[in-house]
Length: 76
Image 1: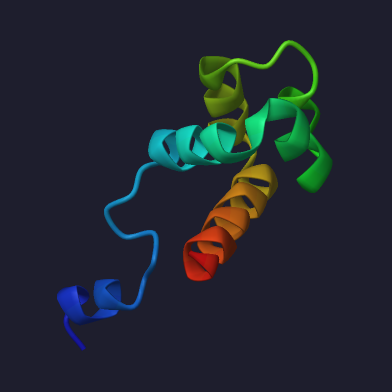
Image 2: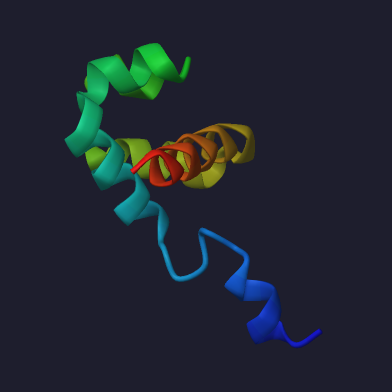
């Protein structure tokens, strides 16, 4: 199976973390995002840049954000 065929089925292919985060923040806001995903960076003085730094360093948190994004894309 070629790399291109593998990426066809990956809903995150071509979507960067900043776009994912901005989309979710626009839809829910930081407060609701913090309620949906138990991550403190969304609740305490949140900014896009501070949340991106945290998510890039914390794989389990990034996975939760990506999973929420995928669920929301399917619900559109």
